Image 1 (cartoon, rainbow over the protein chains, first blue to last red):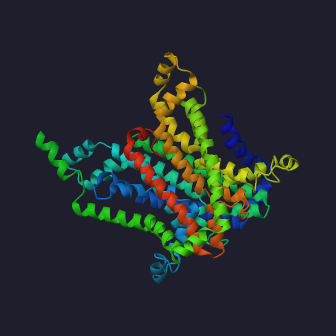
Image 2: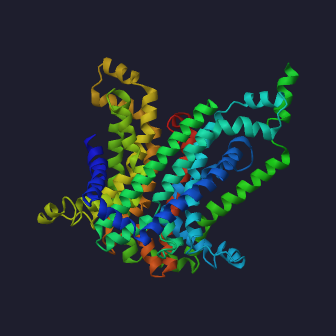
Image 3: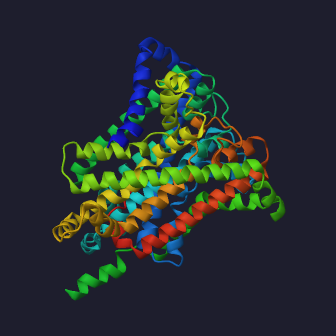
Length: 258
Length: 287
């Protein structure tokens, strides 16, 4: 337990004491720097969009994996964990090569007039990539545990398949879906390795907050680095708190434990 | 009654065949584009100029040093977290004390902290301007921009993996087996090695697997504390970045392909463990 305190607690507390020692006015002067604001906006906005995409696609993927029998399902299921297993720097490198103007996906997109490399769109793609397993893996066990009897009852009572999905399955999955969203979002906000290669890190345009922390550190601007880190921690915490409250609300409303 | 209960199951508890094929097709295409293509591109780019160039770019002094450092860091961080994971899950599962759920939350904390922030906290602690900086400098101990910092940062980010696998399993197993062993006269140490450890061995292996994958692949946290000194404090992921920034793409992808291969082996072993010992692991799944 001493180990835990030594490795986790003391250093983390250090950030807040450091940030607190700045004083409020200094703290805000640092944070109204437009470059920092843009970076925070991109990190949180990109993470939000990425997590939303995963919350839409994830259930379909989980549904297909749990409910449908098809050849090669085991392999497809294992592939889902790739963003967990692949080192972030490697993922970043691969995404950058894939979406480069001459890359496998970048070339057709460039022909269509869509530029991915070194744009916020690239950031969103990277954040979507790393978030997918969080949503799918949270949903899978819950989907597998749902009893088909309820769906059968709905069907016997004359509900169409779409009605059953909308009125029976979706409410049951909502709390879990929110958990998946929160996990994907939390991961995406702090993500660094898989983003920096594809983002190109142009200040005011495709520069994410974690990178800016590193830049400030390299300039030996410790107060700024600490302030960005502190504000990121606080904002992530607040968002997770909101998601937790939403989850409680969804659970009470639908009567399902997520 | 028989008729009512079986016929809707056939007709109405699944989607029409066209919808099923559509969903399956969409899923496969999406996963192919999002997950499989990035993996493929690494190997294709790495071997673009042939096998000789691939081997040559892996056998440079800097690349070998990076591989050695990565192995060294994992060799320290993984056992450290195995010991911690066993100790933490042991005390959480077998004893009751106040603040237990708080402790579990704390163990999970490194998952929700950005790796960059994780690196930053060590710089603030041990760096030249950090809390312990002056003391460390006076005693000529270097932690930041040296191997100890890299090890510490790696331990931090891989902290939860082993403990998270073991805690739910040990809680589910309870301490009946241990009590039986102790009452039959086994020593505490013997009970641990011949009762507790075998009981959790597959979950432990699973945790070690994930812990190792992350330890070898960690980038953000290590990037901050390492200082990027070639041949000295450059781990494999950091080396990938440096090579990429120098437009040495073949070498960057060659080193990346080693890490990607590690990820594939990890996934393979993980699936094999899940398939073989699914029941035991099911208790601890759900991340």
